[in-house]
Length: 272
Image 1 (cartoon, rainbow, N blue to C red):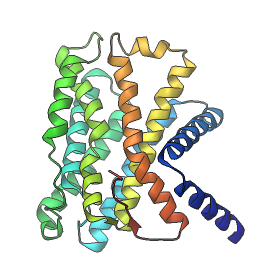
Image 2 (tube, rainbow, N blue to C red):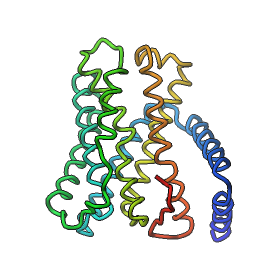
Image 3 (cartoon, one colour):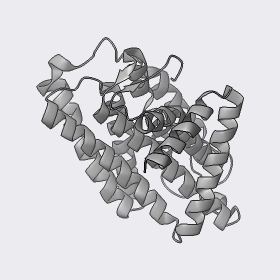
C-alpha cells in the first residue's frame, strides 16, 4: 500500500512539474484512455448518462450533509445553485412535454434537492453565506445562453418554444458551475465537503460527455442526424466538452490533494 501511494505521489509530482502544454497533452491522453476503457466495460452507453445524473445527485447530497451537519453554507455559491435550479427546471419542463423517461425522474429529484439547498442558504444559514466572495455576475452567462439558444436549437418537430428551452438548458448547464469556481478561487481554500461536491460535478460532466462521444462513435455519426440538422448537433457535443474542460483543472488539484493526504484543498492562482 505504501509503495503504491509513493508511486502515485511520484507521478503526481512529475506531472506538476511539467509545462502547461505537456499537462494539456497528458489530460487529453488520459481522457481518451478513459473513453476507451468505458467503451470496453460499459455495453449500454445510455447507462453513462444515467450514471452522470446519479453522480450529480450524489454531489447535491454531499452539500445537504454539509448544511445539516456543520450548519454553515460557507464556500457554497448561491449563484451556481440558482443557475443549476434554472436549467433543471427548464429541462424538466421540456422533458415532460417532449420525452418523459428515467431522466425526468432523476431531474425532478435533483431539482428538489437543489431548491432545498437554495432555501437553506437564503433563509436558514444566511449569516454564513460568503456574499462578497460569490461575486460572479450571472447575467454574463444567462444572456449569452439565451441568445445562443434563439440562434441554434434543435430542428425536431416539437414546438419552437420547447426546442429553444431545451437548447437554453444545454448551454446554461455547461457554464453553471462558473460562479462556484469563482468563489473558490476568491477564497483559495476549499473545505472537504464543497470539494467533494465540485469533484462529483466534474465526474458527472465527464460521464455525460463520454456518453455522447461514445454514442456518436457507435452509430458512426448517425446520432447527430437524429438530434437535428445544422449547428445544433455540434453544439450539443461542444457544450459537453466545455463542461468537462471547465472542471478538469479543479479535478486535477482535487486528486492531487487526495494523493497528498490533504483534507483541505488549496487552489493556486489561475485555476479558474
